[in-house]
Image (tube, rainbow, N blue to C red; front, top):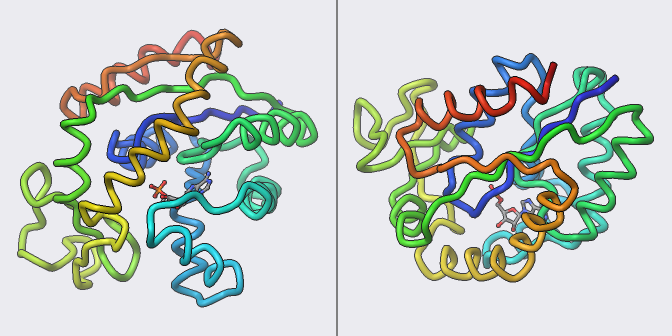
Length: 219
Ligand code: AMP
């Protein structure tokens, strides 16, 4: 039986960082819709060109193309045991599609981890964020600076600010989150799947809280 976990929370809640750690510990791939779009943008594919227009101004890519991209990703062989989803679903239609898709693939959504972080903290986290050009490794000018300014510790490539991490776009992304994604919290709470974690704790404590909360649900 395939096991799917969802990480839910506003932009800047730390989903990407936590997902990378959790996927290693749980042995399922980290599937980030944002990373998949950014791969397409780097590769200059048709989907990348379409997505870029929405992403650079902080809007959501339409459901239909997003769902098709996730369907393809979850059908790959490395996701045979399930996956840890980060940034998907983000709308009620995507949540519904995920329910159907996981059933088709012979699994279910076992838990939805909601990383709760106050909005004032999010703006500072996002606007101080720097990402490596080559592979998207993430740094923060105050919370997690690279050893050498402007250079990725892991692959030596240049650090850049994502267009959508500029302040005006960050505020729009948070607005989109409140309008569309926040609805999913109640949806999953009602389904008994929601695991709520205080995402403003230090990184290692967030990971420990998640592992402890998930233990019973994954056995
Ligand atoms: P993220 O890295 O998760 O913050 O995603 C960056 C951007 O990609 C978002 O602001 C959206 O424009 C787009 N995106 C990522 N995931 C989705 C999704 N599930 N549905 C629609 N758009 C998405």
